[in-house]
Image (cartoon, rainbow, N blue to C red):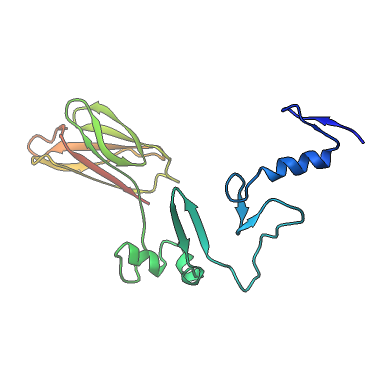
Length: 195
């Protein structure tokens, strides 16, 4: 029978004794995790699984709080995430049978002086191309350049605002003064892309 020396200097006659002593210092649920209230200590297998008829609830615990998702309320219909599913339309306050199309990028930016983004979605930056001429750069490219770009301005004399150059990665926005038909900076430019 072999003898083993531990890091504390205690001699054990064999590996079985050494394992038993080490295992006894572990406390189930305190310094070792449990699975479905079954300790990981001891011998044998712990079976984790559910029958087809019982999917069970989902419980997540941590930081003193426990959250449970009741299996009875999770249905295939509620998990349907297609854009035109009735539960998605309801969540977006959309009614009727017309399909829903998403805004793929939007930005609210200061276009006067130093161009600065106030708030945005899927817009990485704005390029100032000169007076009243800006390029909106997308963080994630559009699938193609066949999107609809919509823009408006807070400048009262700007009758025309639109885009003339578009690609999958960027779109140009032009702000035009209705009195002179020249480009004009604006302190507030609003831009959105739909596809």
